[in-house]
Length: 155
Ligand code: RTP
Ligand code: MG
Image 1 (cartoon, helix red, strand yellow):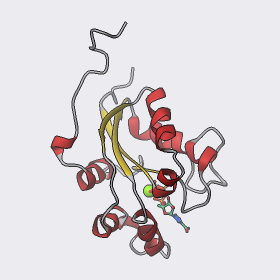
Image 2 (tube, helix red, strand yellow):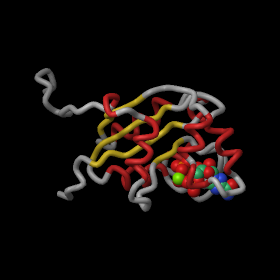
Image 3 (cartoon, rainbow, N blue to C red):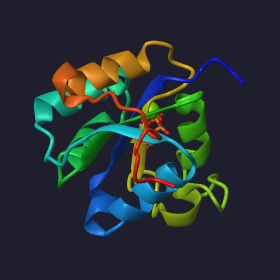
Image 4 (spheres, rainbow, N blue to C red):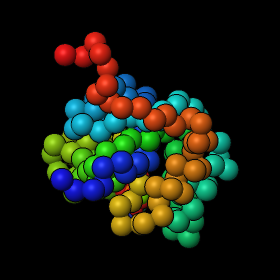
């Protein structure tokens, strides 16, 4: 077994998916894969926080549209935990451009275009991404610690 056991990764359902009633679908896929939900909220993101969240793209031509879009409706920021969680989630989400996302991935099955691509996840190639993004969207006391399988009533 790999030792990436308790890795935490930041994932966020985007306004397009929220508006289309895909919140449960995205959460189900992550649950079914065996990942553990340790933080979740619903909010419309303040512009300042959206700018911080997508700060790495500040100089890109699509930055303003990206910030407009991510603040245009409710989002569901989440933290998921599991073995190699960051890579698992990125693989499940699929490529950024829906035309390149494989069927069977979340974007490959649901994304409408490059902007409306359903879900954000921290980049596994950016080592500090999870810590930074979790810190932007959650206080420590909003993340819970629990054992998935210690329930007496589960048999
Ligand atoms: P995300 O951060 O939202 O999870 O998406 P990602 O890692 O797959 O892609 P990234 O390169 O971080 O880009 C962030 C979001 O910006 C939009 N985008 N538009 N050429 C373009 O017009 C362009 N490139 C990227 C996408 O909505 C992408 O999700
Ligand atoms: Mg990204």
